[in-house]
Image (cartoon, rainbow, N blue to C red; front, side, top):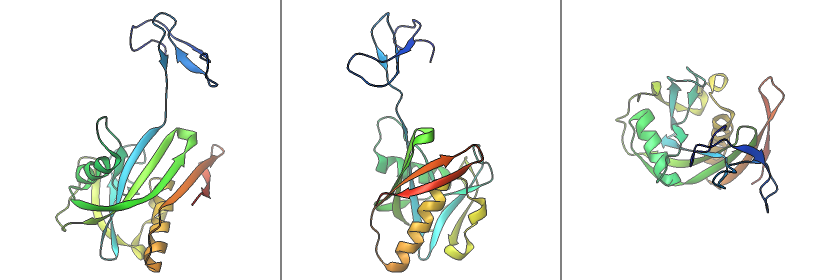
Length: 189
């Protein structure tokens, strides 16, 4: 950030009084600009023993598989964002059951909230951000073609929980290790 979004003056990076982190500060109007993590909301939408998967038509990770998910918009709840993203990416209508997993990605300042849901019907098709949409069983998951580690880890938990017949809420931290894209997963709950 180079300029204040309130008054247009130049900003500097400093630690505001009473704070403990560097922030963008406008000395002209006094505004402190906070840059906080972005929230991604989505849905693990099931039909019988299969999960709705989307092959991405956009970057990042063009051509890779994911569950319907995306950044929250202003003035919507996480639940509404999950419903909207499922409709936008897969033209699918779902009923949300519950929050399933929260995944913290501190290295890219994102938090994923993935809900468990059920497809209301089999009338789905690729949205503008999807090349194709499929219902896939665990044995058919393209594990080597997943778009994001958040999705891989969430689906592993989902299939394990489904086999046990219980769906607790999970929390994970995914930590990037080095520039090669390797990561570690720390299960909080």
